[in-house]
Image (cartoon, rainbow, N blue to C red; front, side, top):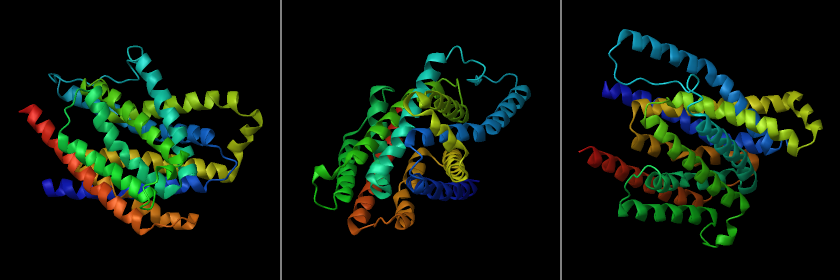
Length: 319
């Protein structure tokens, strides 16, 4: 059974690597008329549509499970049934991930697909930071050390060995802000998950649906009403669907990986995604250099040791 779980975890992990690596390529190859705000709104809306049947299947399975085990001590309350209890949390969820989605696409346009994907790997650092501040998770000195090493790898790759921080263009800086917003949201949602008040699938559906509604409903306050025609352009529709499907499939694969592998292995498995991005970035005219490769190697090693120590921390806390 462990070997079977490993095979399934690797299968979904490889699919996830491909999907994550493809996202910046789709984002940066879309028509110039498609601004990041509208693109983010439609990505979230399509994502929520895709996850709706998945959440319905999950709710049915949970109901069947509860009927088969009436003495079950842990009961998961659906956000859709208990939304009044979580209304402030849900509003925050929609705004947080909606803003992050817009910044995500802007960051890639300004930083480029390769540099943007490398900067995105700082998520593990912000996960440590917000885990410590919000969830009171412990941090070891070795994790701090490897966090600095990870930053070293990112700077090495993006500046091509010059270590001139002025080469951190606005896109790279925005990607760092985006990863911080992402991980802040994940740290806060973890408290809901720990209390068994929602499942990961419910949270993914809720955040996409609410982000899409918030972004789309505010879009025409900032952009001309004529942009409504962009929604009916066949090429634009193709990119809406492509990003929505790839983004949603990536989230689905991520949770499948977590089902079969522990978080540390899943995090390390996801770390080489810039290689896939670099391969497809050739069609965008970008070049994957030796400094990119060395920096990525340092990043992967750093992520491995950071999540390994996190796993040890969790074991120590349980004991």
